[in-house]
Image (cartoon, rainbow, N blue to C red):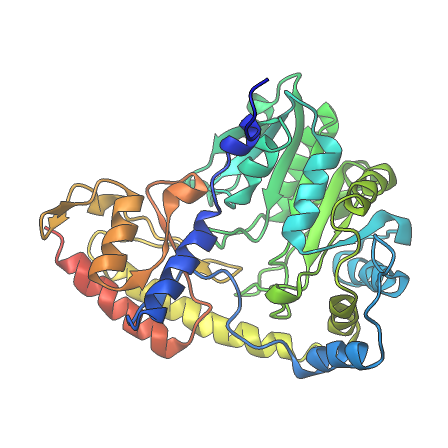
Length: 399
């Protein structure tokens, strides 16, 4: 017998978004002035009432284990959230509180996928989707979408990708990295295909609250009882309430799936942090006046960043309707050179901008879309202006 790590572990790479964030932080620690557009979290502080709820939890001694699936009061608050925001009726037993939405997604993969199962993932995709599938010995089936389609998988494309081995499709709306989202008509068509073939829909809706231009978020699970029975909805408080470090996400879905996820969680992390659960309860039950203020600021930054990007030679960018990312097409820059360096792909461009312009961002190949790069506008307008100036100068230097 040969000792060593498992083959599936060897196939997994560190999260490229976290790797870029770590690199930018290391450069800053060395005194280098880096503009960081790689971060995937709000730059706003957690609302004061939410922080105070966490403090009260500590002071009152609410620091012990809770039920592995989360406290009853927080699960009930999530039930109410789905009913109020999405028109979805769930029982407490259909809710699982986890250590962030990423943890919820991983629990789903553990609960649903058997070796050889196929999981359809439209690209561009969030970086962790394929690796979570691979870690559970299943097969990610990447279906490319185009900018012209609004980066949405069509029902026809989905139908064509389905085989006897297909277990699920992963949807992310609003999307990381594109900032675009699914409309009702497209979701209805996807739902019809999923019901026809009896495949699960894993619906990542973590950016639900961060939408612009009057866009209305629709959960695919709300489109009828049949699709609801096939859908596991993932959400949380990380993005909506600037609580990324508190690590609270949640999932809702068919009782048998949620029970399996809960059993898995009981053997891994057990309960999410008790203190964080009290803070999340306040985030869901307390005043929501923080959100429109944050969204209004994101909206201003969104418009400014996209306008600046579209004025750069060889760069074009669609206006996102959600999240806090711009996803410009930079393919026209490929083949150009500066200082003896030739830009051949998005990784080359990201490295060039970091070294020559001191701007950190994420290459599109990390999301399955090499013609693009991802920039986060979850930072101050002052920093965005400085970063745009630096990128523009670096792009102009490419000949």
